[in-house]
Image (cartoon, rainbow, N blue to C red; front, side, top):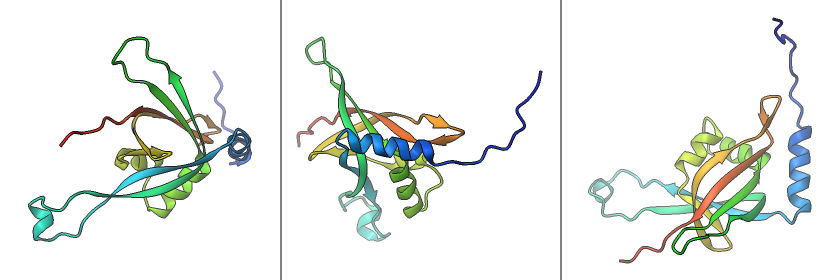
Length: 145
């Protein structure tokens, strides 16, 4: 058996092609909801302060319905395709270790003012570099108080 010992040089061609494709398909901006952690104080320690979130814009993105519910009460599934360059910029700005850490911390995604919960994240790669992130989403249920 032979092993591939060649050095792979990073090339942003796939990432640029994905960005162009997302823009040409009518890509728009969505908001990633990230929690804002309160400063350690008396109120924060006993849980009095409400959790606040900030909207971080991501663009270009494409949003589509994946599955139409066949049974009553079955939730719809949606897919969001986001440019890897936008995710990498956000990971760098927030000083996180990876895109996985970003999506783990995120509370959801807002699309046209509607909140969706992240169920799964996949990232197709070329030469070990992600060029697109695909998020499987479901609509967040309204909570009654």
